[in-house]
Length: 229
Image 1: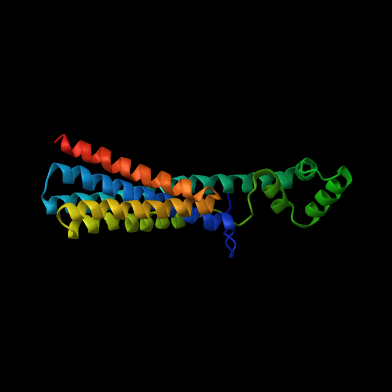
Image 2: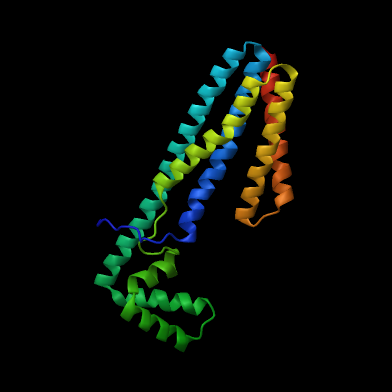
């Protein structure tokens, strides 16, 4: 398969892919770190032990999210490049079938038969590969999701989100540290929910409340686990 380079201008899908990875990384980063902090903190009062456990989990979570995003998005990119290669071969071997696919695409969109035929013929004469990729797969030629971009976004955002409860628990001692960590976790979780709802055109208040509740439940569960030891 020939190597097809990405076009210089990113599409909205490419940008959203990186943002999506960052949002997921942030959510996972703060929940896993705060979970470890409270489970270890409930089991021991040694601040150094709590800090080491928290920072170890912070690095593990960030790297895990990055590697997971890289593997997942790489598979998606591979699939996109496979269909490009497939349709390139079809164009060379049977251009009539490609034109028929384009024709059917516009026909199913409600365009009249005559107009659909004219559009298909015009696209076959100008940009046949781009047209069939858009029609059949919703793929834009030269625009592929970036595994590295998603991995870096997830890595950075997971680390940034997780570091806030870690620093709070480390530098604020006693009950103030516990209350402060819960508070900062709730605030960041709400912000992540707000961002995810904004990107997904969802209900912002519902997403924020859902994230905060999940964060508090995570804290309660891990605190309970720590108390068992």
